[in-house]
Image 1: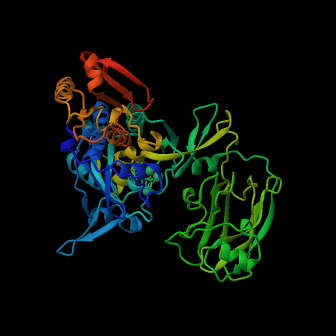
Image 2: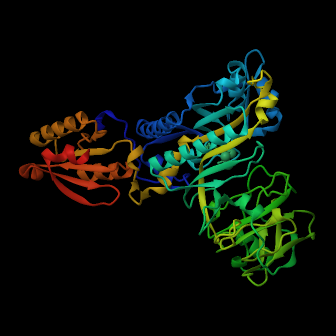
Length: 565
Ligand code: ATP
Ligand code: MG
Ligand code: MG
Ligand code: MG
């Protein structure tokens, strides 16, 4: 491709509303543009990356024996009523009505549609097992779309659904998908971990999530330093053995404050130094007076701390949290009641190092005083309350837990008969009886993978693509080609040779000053750069620079194709 024919829309400045590095760099490198909240256009350069990622996923799914289909993105409400998810799914489901007043949704996932297909097409046990997949646009009306394509509303997912006569067959395909996912993420060149996951609301028996490790990850995962044990923290919590922890109960008190959530106002009103007041954050979608869970982990900046639904709390909830408080790991539940109400909180005094703070409540003009956080957690009243911590013994008894941040890029799930029984997907068995099929589902967030790859591969100059998904493998930059016919002609020759050798090469024929062209290409993150100029040409040499290592070398021009291939 010639750069003069390509839309290269790089930005010098970091867009103000992009919080994490992948979002910033995808905008700055001209890979994506925002249309509306959670909706993005892929520009040509970005789409190349997406398509390469998709191709790896497709190749490995095909290799695993799965069959590709493409289902509609718009789905009839009747199917969702049959599975009982029309009511259950909640506001994340985008519901639409057609001109005949029939109800539809824009598919956030496709269990219903595929099960409907299978109940019509598959009649006999002889046709099982099968595994169908698609690479399709999904829409989820996320409560807080953010981080660009990391948590978008419209995004690209590879989803697969397998159907079986029995559990043993399901387990076999599940294991196959586990291995396939590991191959996909390894091939792309990502550092990832497979962790045990909660089976949550879908129901079912076994589930693993694949997480790309990155400090910006919205999930926390726990893994053993000695064994293969790895789980998402929510799951690890429920099973981690209890440590020995001294704890004492205290209370915090609801007070009325005139100001809304600014530290200085609160500080003034309560006559406490600002350093003793925690900055608070209110998250949208929380009803006044509802129960809040306080969850603060690690030394994250405020915007990295995550609101979580506490396992014991059914009500919609949010959290109150601290800015830049080191090493706090704690969960509390408190409800914002009338002024003067005291709420029990649990504090580990031995480790407590943040004490007697003021923080916001999830109600305007209300604050909590006497809030104490400890480094450690007390014995919980129920196992569910227990938060797992770094250094805890691993639940499998081998080694201790480490905690890391992860981005969920894939998820595999044994669904069992949950959908097939509701939709009555049956086959005839060998003995001629009809039997409900059993089912698995397997998702990869293809567009999220692209963002996650950037989180793991960048420096202060821009993206450093893993070779597998780079928009171009090589960029060839002729220097001052507009002044030198020799350079121009030689560059054209080398470009044609590389093309003929099957190298995905970009010729930067825009005629920009070298420094400007180089900065662009480093921001875009092309792995290999070739520079051809008058001086090199005199000696028959071409300059090479590796984007990742920054190492430069000179090659004989005639050797370029061999070296780059
Ligand atoms: P999350 O916990 O991040 O909300 P999920 O568990 O709801 O994800 P799944 O239903 O397991 O997502 O969907 C399969 C995959 O689709 C996820 O593992 C993730 O990679 C991707 N995905 C889900 N939601 C989004 C989104 N809003 N934007 C981009 N990718 C997403
Ligand atoms: Mg989700
Ligand atoms: Mg999830
Ligand atoms: Mg998931």
